[in-house]
Length: 171
Image (cartoon, rainbow, N blue to C red; front, side, top):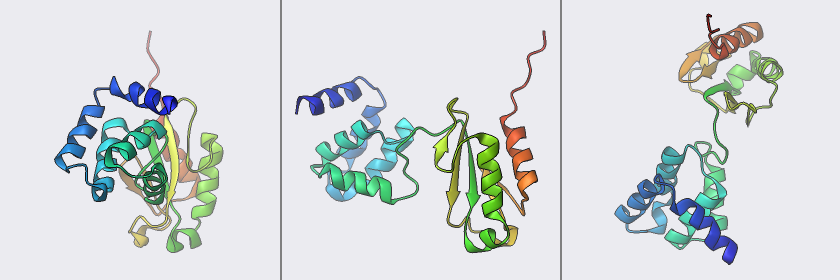
């Protein structure tokens, strides 16, 4: 129990927690407000840490397993910090049939990470989505908030490299 106390103490000093607390108070600490509270928490912190999930569970008087279950069930929640940039490859049927698997493989190779991971330098998170909702552009991907498609493996890697280019300092 002392570990639980200390985990919450770590969060108590974080000013972003006030946003989450306000949301829970506004929603009257109702357990059925869990998803809305988790959205607020993720907006404030960028991701849902284990200690943040534990805190929300305690405040809403829910089992931690239930809160963790909800956070892992919905694709829009993330339990790890996201990269500065994101690359999402659509793996829906239309995209997959037209080569999304090869595109994903090439992007994983180029970035040095697997789908669902973030590069060690925190610059890129690579992921997949079951459907991005625009099958006419198959195969497609999103770089940050921009949709690209139809895409080829070489084109996808080129676009990713351009996104991640760091301007060279002139001296």
